[in-house]
Length: 439
Image (cartoon, rainbow, N blue to C red; front, side, top):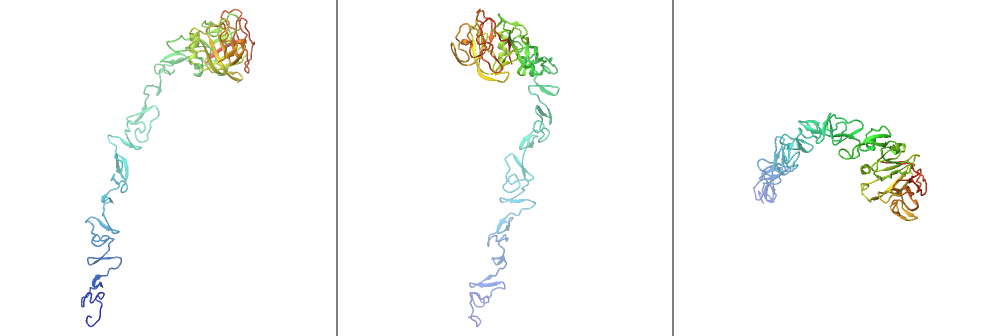
């Protein structure tokens, strides 16, 4: 009872906690104590109504003071950054320049990069420039010659920021890089052009190696004679060869021709004979030339006087041709002039051929003297590469009346346009008139 009235001293602001103990104008009595009555989301702290979301002395709660520099924002103490800087990890930084916070907080640049304009860029030293993520010397770099992305052409280098021709081990001739050891227009030195019928080898003008090389160089004047050098300078001497520039695409270096007459040299012979093979006169190159031609050839051909031809996809000889008592067999695809084709073998023997059997184009199977394996049955010591009864031969040599080592060629089995002559002709001389070549 206070001043003649019954009051609740726990709640009465005129008698808060006891009679006559009045609270201030903005206070209320709660639990017998005068307290501030704060509105608008503020909180009473130290006798004042404060906004704990923004008050740096009571940031997030009464008595939670921020340091002198930070401000209170959303109930949390934060740096107050000026001059366009940004608060990152408790520091004010310039995100346009800070490599640890480039373009934004926590966006760190790589070790060799700097931050410029808020972007990480290479920090290039020694006069180099950042191009495509690398430090390059635009005075020397052919991909960035004089500036980023200014690439030099092939065979060009960069010198002083300008693209210049760089020939390396080649030679600069007329603003082009050339190999003066093989360039026919600059053979041995710039401007030294070889004659039309010659190529450049080891810096010297020399005849083309084969008829195929003449053809490929665009120097063909049709079938006829051409000076060639099969193995280049220092080997076999250059010689006048006969070239078939028309049959099956041309480029055939002719090495042999037979007329069917008695006494002619066989294909394996080392004795040179100088008729005109393109006119189907007897003709033969020596073994050294045949071996040199075989070393570079990939195909052989037999051309009949009547027109049809037979081609094999292998050189006609190998490097054993001049080795005594040698013979060979090669698996080949055989193609006639009308495109009829078969699998078979070509082979030669430079011994046991006094009555023929020096050369064959044939196929496997039974003969009247045994079985042809790799094309021949080897049944006779006088005609080593001739099958018994002359069977299975697209080309064979049989001249048995007088075993004097001369040749007589015939055909026992037809292949398309390549027709048989006689089944087993053993008379002196043959009935097949042809020439043989390689390319």
